Amino acid sequence: MKIFRSIDEIRESLPSPVVTIGNFDGVHLGHREIFRRVKREAARLDGVSMVITFTPHPLKVLGLRKELRLINTYAEKELLIEASGIDCLLTIPFTAEFAAIGAERFVGEILVGRIGVKKLVIGYDYAFGRNREGDVAMLRRMGEEHGFEVEVLEQIASGETVYSSSAVRRMIAAGNVREVVSLIGRHYSVGGTVVHGRRRGKNLGFPTANLRTEKELIPAAGVYAVKVRVDDTIRDGACNIGNNPTFGNEEVTIEVHILDFDGDLYGKEIRVYFVDRVREELRYPDLNALKEGISRDVARCRELLAGVSIIEYRDYLGGDAA
Image (tube, rainbow, N blue to C red; front, side, top):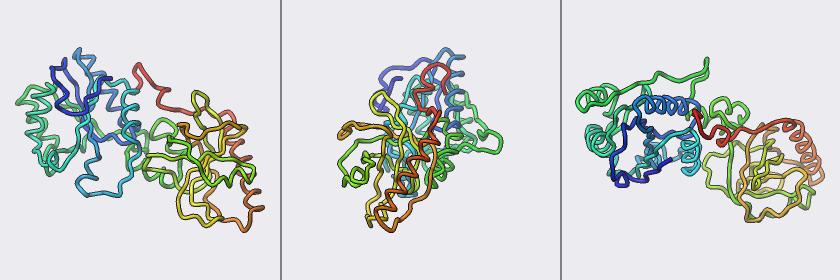
């Protein structure tokens, strides 16, 4: 996938670009259906498929939802879009100045003048530009003026399940990591670096890897059955998210006990895939009760993980993968 990190990096014309525009946070199954349609139309026109997105998220820049927690880091989103088989990705740095650009100027100068769009694929409720003036009616009018097609996709759903980033955020924030697979098409994961912790797990007989991550959206506090990618190996694990109320901590930590593993992980990059939630966070009366509780959690994680294979972005890499 060719990546343009600004509009100025597009220095030559692209062959018959078929374009979609959006934030695509989560790259859920609805997004992947849009990408699939973009790829098919690009093939029909003997052109290239292109996704246009923004960083940071516009809602954060505009101050509308500063508390918004993104589902993916930008690096993850880039990988997921590439894994969906898209030819080109344009990431536009989103600033207050860019937000002030009118929709007609954006279409005329960028979509038509710089990219040479031949077809635009958008969702039924999509709007962009200053005051969201770039709606479906305006885009269709501009398409007639500049000679590009506009296709509007209806709400994408499976039965009663509507695919949306908001729904994904709610499920993960509630700890519903098992059901969220039906929206994103893969197991939710958090990647990061293993750092030194307080060594309490090791002293209790259950050494943990403490994860430092750039991920904004972390599942609700509690214990989870997880799979852990260490280098090229997937291992079973138990993950605790929370502030360890038994010890009265304030800082929220992500601690992973990898089953039947005794290696040194400090400084390593690992990725934790959440399979199911075992329980919410608990406060134990003493260390013996805590140790017994951890033993039960680990046993339950073994049961939940038996025979489970995780689904990750690389599982749909290439082909009609979206």
